[in-house]
Amino acid sequence: MGTDTAASVRMPAAFCGVVGLKATHGLASIRGIVPLSETHDHVGPLCRSVGDSALMLTALAGFDPLDAMSIPSSAANYFEAIGRSVSQFRIGIPREPFFAGLDPDIGAAVDEAIAVIRKMTRSVTDVTLPAVNSLPAMLADVYAYHANYAADPERRKLYQPLTLERILEGAAISAPMYIDARRRMAVGRNIIADTFASVEVLVTPTTMVTPPKVAGALASPPSEPTLIRNTVPFNALGIPSISVPCGFTRAGLPIGLQISGPRLGEARMLALAHAYEQATAWHQRQPSSGLVRHN
Image 1 (cartoon, one colour):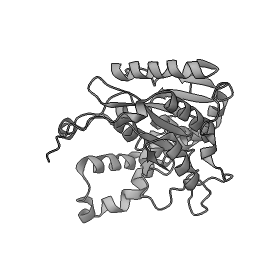
Image 2 (tube, rainbow, N blue to C red; image 1 turned 90 degrees about the horizontal axis):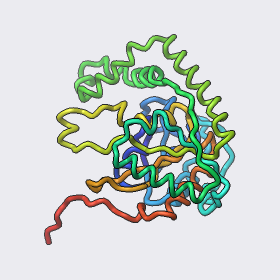
Image 3 (cartoon, rainbow, N blue to C red; image 1 turned 135 degrees about the horizontal axis):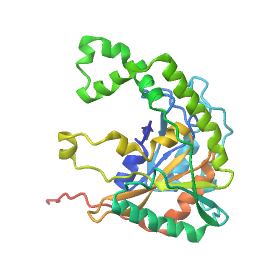
């Protein structure tokens, strides 16, 4: 299980060659987790297969009246989507910004994945998504939770410097800025439905870059906006997304393909993810750990 505010289920899934799922915002209760930004937070499974993810989501989904973000929804068996025909699916490809500046290996793998999907579906067409800058809302949410801890000199020392720096950025977000960001998020979540009037699902790369090496990341933290560029829009829009393995880099690192559906459209998203998974063998390949076993 993982929590995903901007990427933290789908990005590690893509980097590790497994499946990572976040459902529609509010479908799975986040009560009990340490919040980062309730307006963006999701909880979801990381699994070996799309089928396992569907089983997990069936157990997770449901209205929780004690979770302020929870939404009413009918009970569903999401595993029933596994094996469903996708031959009549229309696939939307949002080129901007999701395909700009990709690592070449990621770009090649995703192009190949789209070619596979094109053969099993009705059509593939470019679409445009509403741009939603939800960062002010996210920063304010983060600061609201941590403000009292950060104000305590002893507890403040427990934060890592980079974490504390990011938390304190939220102190600069005024109430009008926060309300404006929340309003823009709400409008974006409304009008994204227009996109799905012409397509069933969206397909993008999960990430635009490959994971940095630990030593390099510790010496110089990677650009967070770069890491989450392809994932955070779906948190802001509140729609479901899943990352499935779609290849490996020349260095042997896994690559993820992100499939997203409309609000409460988990079934069609899972159907395409499973169909693609079964049409390829990437989910069966394990990356080399680089470790040497000594008997």
